[in-house]
Length: 350
Image 1 (cartoon, rainbow, N blue to C red):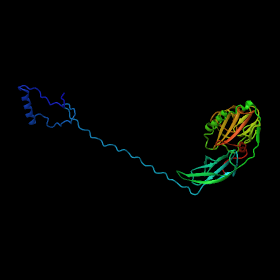
Image 2 (spheres, rainbow, N blue to C red; image 1 turned 90 degrees about the vertical axis):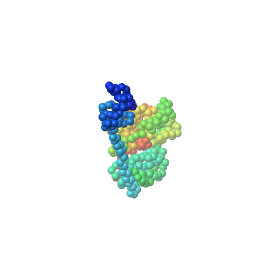
Image 3 (tube, helix red, strand yellow; image 1 turned 90 degrees about the horizontal axis):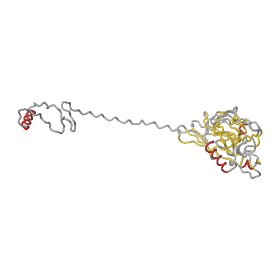
Image 4 (cartoon, rainbow, N blue to C red; image 1 turned 45 degrees about the vertical axis):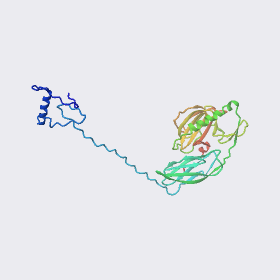
């Protein structure tokens, strides 16, 4: 094999007396065109060429493919709502520990919310209106106040706001003078209180079904007599009134059937240190009912229930002096009187 970097070596030929003579004759022959190499192209620098094979040709370099540019999306159209939203309340004044329904109308609005007593609430869209159930805590300050309603057009834009007046009024509630044994009161430890607040804040009331599941009034969840009303100030063993009763107590025998007060989904089920064995049902739109001090729980998480569904058996677990159902109702975690919901319908006005 011939190296491209070495001079070509001629064959040894008879009749030449020396290599020099042979080189001279070969040179003369090439000058005269006798060596047959006049049309052979020179190999490119650094290329390796096998004698007798065509020299490689350069492959043309393809032009680089242009990188496509992103097609700009059109900017969303920002709309501005005409006028201001209108808001009404039913009832027009709300008692401490009670609820009211706000109904908002603003043609063209796509989103709406309300700020009431220091908390923000989402408003549900229902056709051409927005609405929500609002709660006044038992400790809400009395007197006139303002609810701030905010609406937005599709795509955002500048929000529209309006201040809607509403009053918080007092509700006459008696004091509950409870006598409890040392064994019963022993569960009222600081640790138990912290545990219950943690469960309520981070597990029980941190998510809600958006759409309302109830239709009409709610039903009493158990047979029996009301032993303690909602909102009563509580004095334990002759002590000062230190708290308010957060639900309605319905007393009856151990094992009395407990049913759901309205259609909904089981959002939580398990033991609590003070409220005892518990079931919570999410009825949508921030409304939940709680069933406490149960002897036995008969439903599981995410079960769909209605007033015909038996969810538990009445008991006396947790802080309890005897068999009864402690029935609670909350609106976005704020306790209200559940018995009021057995007497009137909370729904938007049209």
